[in-house]
Amino acid sequence: MAHPIPCPPWPVVLVAGLVLTLLLTLSAAYGLHGDEMYYVVAGRHPAFGYVDQPPLTPLLSAASVGLLGVSPTAVRVLPALETTLVVVLVVLVALIARDLGGSRRAQILAAVTAAVSGYLAAGHLDTTTTADLLA
Image 1 (cartoon, rainbow, N blue to C red):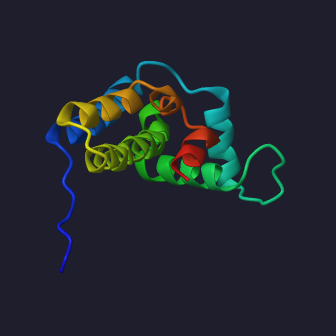
Image 2 (cartoon, helix red, strand yellow; image 1 turned 90 degrees about the vertical axis):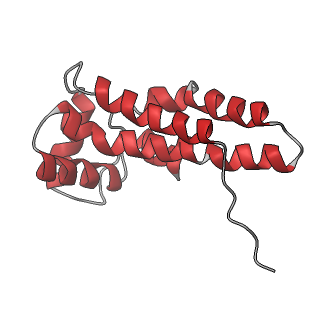
């Protein structure tokens, strides 16, 4: 017997969408952080020998700027998406809450809790943290 695809309550999906919208809306409100500029430059000269970060974040930063141009929003698109995916993973937590007998309210509370946690703050800047949280 095939299992139905679990469908979270629409407010859980709405929370994830609001996180992405908020991060992208605020991304141009302040200039680039020094580390963000460093990642873009390091991504243009990839190496496994960087002692202060793995090569993935610089490569993604340089690719984002290459595709979207040099702007704070272009640099922060991928961290915003990564953070949104982390919040979307909370859908799993909501589904587990449902499977354990949690009400619709409990599922929504799980999504809101994740949205206002440190994950949201990590998504404001392009750092290695966002990729780490997603992994």
